[in-house]
Image (cartoon, rainbow, N blue to C red; front, side, top):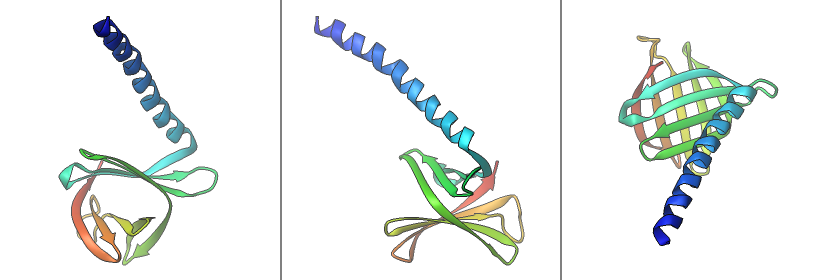
Amino acid sequence: MKTLLKRSALLLALPISVLVNFSLRASADSTAGIILSTKCQGGNNINIWQNYNSGELLYRATNPNGHLSLGKGTKQATEGVRVYKFRNRNYQYWVWDGTLDSPQSGTLEVYKNNRILMRQTCRKN
């Protein structure tokens, strides 16, 4: 009986998790457009979105350790290169859109209390 209950719970949980996963992505796609998509060292995949109505910048990152979603980002142009900045408590995430030498590459920088923790090179998709 316990085995039957476990199998039933698993069969019910799997379609629900798949449905929730796809419905969340569709929701994001319908309210915002992607403006930057990168793959970084260490398995980080970063997408920067801009909300169609408000213009708000959104940060979506996936990596082997999980997902991170942030809003209220800013965009600056520094020496001809755009940098997108997002904050999550004491952490700051900077995504550089290209470099002066290579427009198809970029950099992800993570700061904690204004001290750099990580820097990864990225490649635009």
